[in-house]
Amino acid sequence: MQCTPGDFGAVLFDVGGVLLTNGWDHIERAAVYRHFGLDTGAIAAIEARHPEPYDLLERDRITFDEYLGEVVFSEPRAFTPSEFLDVVRQQSKKLPDSALGVLGEVAASQRWVVGLLNNESRTLHEYRVRQFGLARHLDLQLSSCYVGLRKPDPAMYRRALDILGLKGSQVIFIDDRAGNTDAAAAEGIQAVQFVGEAPLRTALRSLGIL
Image (cartoon, rainbow, N blue to C red; front, side, top):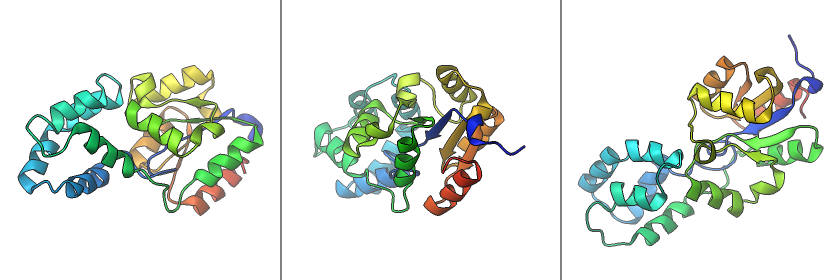
């Protein structure tokens, strides 16, 4: 059944891969490793230690300093954690084919609750929101570091719906990863996979949002 604008109460955006580059994904990690001249053995050891602490980091169970201490600085380095984090932050940039303009237009209409539903550590999430002026467009931020859950865990989508006080059919969610949009759709959410600004605009026009 075709939904109409009145059927929707909220539009939620992912951040990395939709609005901005990712915060600390494999591409960003590789760039930081190159910056500090880490050799293949050091990189392999860091990557082997990364997954479990990273999950805890994005759910705000540990701090970024604790993550770095366990993953990167478990052995002596020629650079400091502060220097390392500065270079991590430098990896965040506006995505070349970004949905930032779409976010601004949807928010300016003041017809729907507009928010973020993203996986990110508190340190990077808050830096990115501040650095790129995202907060002025937002009514709420449902980042993993605030809700303690990560996509594509179904519980994260259910928590978002509980916080919004809406049914899945009343929420539009935009994410670049099929696994995340599929999981959202399984909870009844109108999920749109982001593959570029123009296709997103087409999808949102068909839903009556733009």
